Length: 102
Image (cartoon, rainbow, N blue to C red; front, side, top):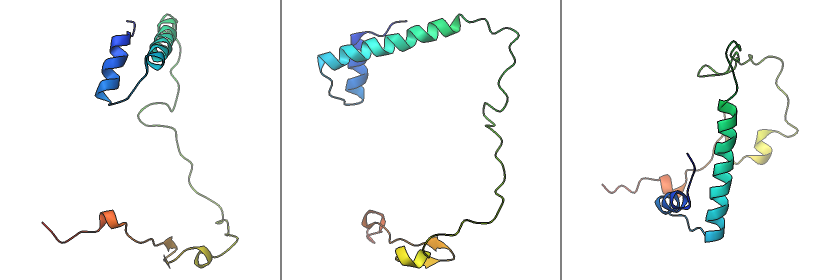
């Protein structure tokens, strides 16, 4: 299935993107090139190929943290306005303050 200029214009309008005709044509070409690569990959015979281990919903195994912590060149107090329990405290953004109005 090929992507058309109308497809790109439609998606651009849904996303409220302003695309020039030159850029829209370039995107059509880029998307169709990607789809062409996908068509070639779909032709590869993968029968009998073992699936990749650790890839999928479970993700890759993560090793546990070990070893001593790496000390900072300066203490947290030297560059943080406020520290509690090893965490940096930052002021709330004004946009997150409740105004008390309902």
